[in-house]
Length: 107
Length: 116
Image (cartoon, rainbow over all chains, first blue to last red; front, side, top):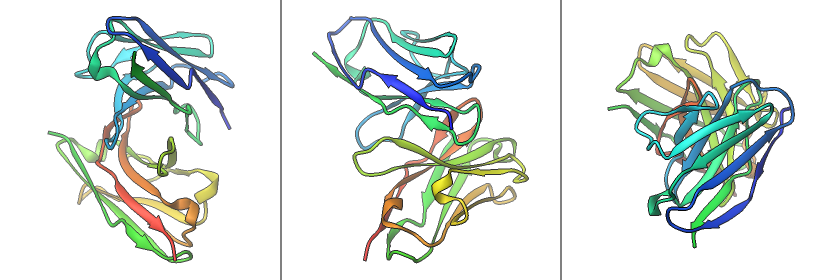
């Protein structure tokens, strides 16, 4: 099975700060990597698909990048509404695997 | 507007069965692979099963293989998850999601509680 190691587990940042979350895949997954935001009591929301493509309706302050088997989600100019838990997902091969999540809070 | 509406969750005893449904609207259901993702209380997301757009291919996580069956009825734009021999560790909110370039569309989830 492909393991997705997500870091950090939690993060506290200030408004307007730049935030980066990373996921390390245990093997090559190409661009079959997506990022999700989940708020308490709500369903997850797709932010980034295909490692770097912004999903429809997602603010442009969110971006995704890839370096080999390391994937990053960057949030430019953090806003209040960006708090929540962020997950990466590899859907290169079954079983698809999510990262453990990053809880993002405002400082 | 895209909508995925799950139903069928509730309280069930260990060893019993339950069938979840997910009614889709607002997009061409028959063009999309679909999946079930679950989330145990206070835990992270866990992929459960995926089915291809035409139902010809299915994939499961090991812990549900042989107990759960994912299926679909494209004429009714509905996704199903038949869950047999339920265990306490299957307790979770189950989400229906479209499996295309990641999981773009999500339902609101339905809670399944396995307990005696």
